[in-house]
Image (tube, rainbow, N blue to C red; front, side, top):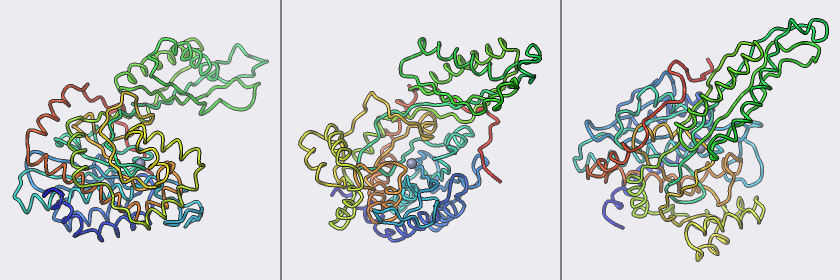
Length: 475
Ligand SMILES: [Zn+2]
């Protein structure tokens, strides 16, 4: 192993128990979006112990924070998450359904690992800076509510990431790779119409129907589909159909729209057209309209310079070091999925790594190969609040194997594996790779320069939520 990788491995090893204990603690807390009080506090304690100075309540969110070490430029950021998902409580390591708390929350996306892994990366980078007298700043951003609420969009809108010259993040996964795909940009909007109720047979001329407005709006949008870019997706649902009585003209009705496209600029353009169709429907029906944006996420843009760096670092520090026990445990989870699914996964991984790997992926339930670096043209069909950060500063994202191949996202199987050694080994591997990349970026200013040059060619950041919109935090 090369020298820097060895050094980073030493730093991480020194605190290994601390990290696995903390990740288990956060796994047990399993706190939902914006309620991650204990998880954030535990991470803050860790960072303070390690000599970081901490700023809390970022963007008006009590569980959002930043922990900084060092001073001046460049600022290398690490993004961590720690929110859980509802109804996925599950005994750690158990491949049969056994909720710890009936209908309780669980870490079905592995964010207990995500937060601690990113914190561990920041700490190892700090250790290196300290030992070798490197200048610059490392900053760990505690980002709540990724699953539901997307805290990073408020943090990005309020300028929290403006100081960052290069950001690294990771996600627990089924393989070891660098995220080269774009994710989709998306907005969600409520269109509420108000009309006038009346007896639908007795005095129909006095009524103005909000339900009619919704129907006309949908017809208009459906005609728009022929004239929008093929990559865009527009979906709607009735949030309020105005009541159940056909003989009462509906004086209120609400539609909920999702608009997605590869770029946020395309989404915002489409949203303007959908807004105008809604206005047209209100005009036709003599109803009034209110438009409320409830969420908006930018597409994720992988910074190729930093992604390449992160891939080199991952290759230097290595894939997770699973042992026979981990493989045996992973197999029990693997077998909870139909053979057809496992075969499909082996083939799709094989397509990325080479045909010669298919057999290995077919028989080995845990991934310890690092995939080649790729930047596919097809997007990832999903959206994430890391997208907004990637518009503000150059960003790279790593996936590390923390669960058996083929495990479904947001599942109890994933929660079970995030609370045991399989997940923790993936977390430690991710931490080492990100710390390694950060140290290299601190050592060689040209890397950040190139990353920023590339970043400047992107479209400017447009936050898709209104300036005065506040995060949906329940008091
Ligand atoms: Zn997640």
